[in-house]
Amino acid sequence: MNTANKLTMLRIVMIPVFLVILYLNFPFNRYLALLIFILASVTDFIDGYIARHYNQVTDFGKFMDPLADKMLVMAAMLWFVEAGRMPAWALLIVVVREFAVSGLRLIAVDNGRVIAAAWSGKVKTASTMVGICLMLLPVPRAVDLAVTAVIVVTTVYSGVEYFVKNRDVIDWSHM
Image (cartoon, rainbow, N blue to C red; front, side, top):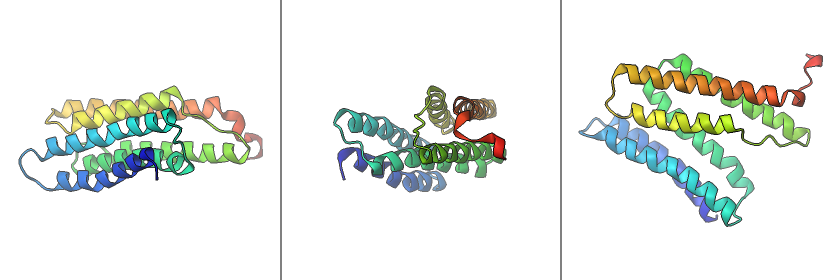
């Protein structure tokens, strides 16, 4: 268990702490949840840097790092849906995109090909994380709607881009 993988595991441990803080209704709980979310998000950038810079890339990290990111984002979005601050269909779009892109990557790997993270996927992740941070603040409903729109648009765009750029991975003629 190297440093990068420990940071990934720390991020996973922070997820239930983040949710418990959100559910416990005490003064400034959202600010504390925001701090935890930011710290968890920052570990994503740090563990990636450490893994690449110090040659700590492992199969465990390749699997768990993106999974930890998805778990953190989904946990926050599920809470927003439950709190009535985000429509469930927006979360469904995010979930479907993640499954679809993961499935495409599995097919590619089975064919001896690796699909690297696209720039649009990085933009989607960054805008989603920033948007979640905004929604954790006491903002007007219009901000919730704008953040949801940005998340949906970047999610759909990046998902479509993955399939368009890698359309040769799937043999569509035998469907």
